[in-house]
Length: 70
Image (cartoon, rainbow, N blue to C red; front, side, top):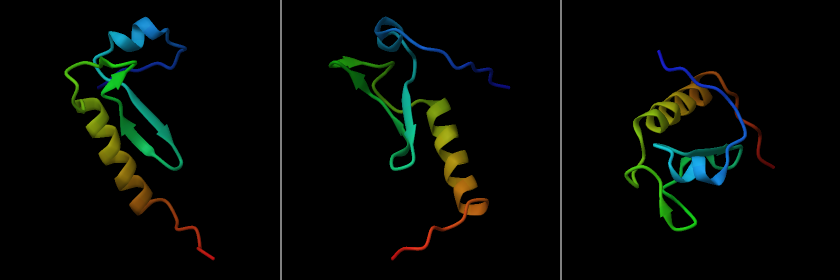
């Protein structure tokens, strides 16, 4: 399985990362291709990010609940 940990990262760590993504209620889970005009990894969405996006979508569809709109 994939191992992970949460920590504060320096800009240097972001610049040299294989993959970077952001997450939030509005943006859900989005890949980052560049920071400060520096390309992250290959400049494409990475495999881990794709897997997490798929899992996020699947779970919100099947486990989450709709918030009524006014």
